[in-house]
Length: 166
Length: 102
Image 1 (cartoon, rainbow over the protein chains, first blue to last red):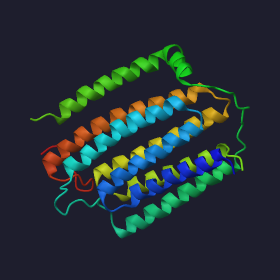
Image 2: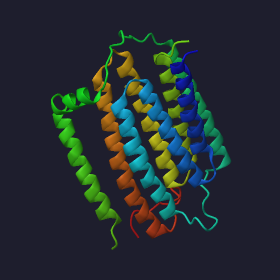
Image 3: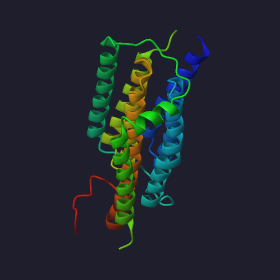
Image 4: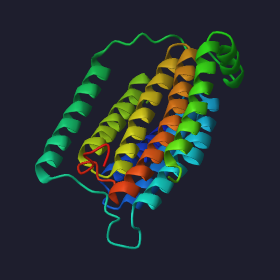
């Protein structure tokens, strides 16, 4: 078993283990912090897939931005010092149905993935993806890139407008 | 043992199901958001894995970057809406948020 294989199983276990903690934990703060390790695990998987730029982006935006926003959300909408830090489960019946549905979904997905004969191209050696991504963003995907920048501007303005004091 | 495309796909499939379970089984709106992030991450793993095993096709990376951009915008707007719901109802239980206007 070489190092890449070990690294893959380590990151996969990190992602799925803490992902399970996120959805199963009763304490919402624990769930938010487990999400941190899940994102780290996914960044590790990106590194193993030779996606260096995406791994850094994942750490900077997901962990530095989205996770901080989510933790803000937890702290602003939950009475941390009171009793209300529970993450609010639904009823027993719905929980059972949901668990059954999710397990069935996972089984079907894994079955589909394993039974499909994927076309696999010979691996091309790429040193760094940042240059390729930059070129593609400013040529082939220029319109989508500009639309994304407008979307982010609208999201900032909209968020500030919605959350302001009346 | 060689790590191939299928390994990554299985990880992403299981992560997707976990996120689905999180969304469907929780009432707290922030927990639903966390489940959503898990699902988006699962989709991203798929994009990058197919990019890698499709001959290092950079289009998959671009799609993943746009998913991350959309996730950031969605998280910001969702948090703003959550704050408003909390100010109005004093809780964020999605089951009990049932009117848009007083």
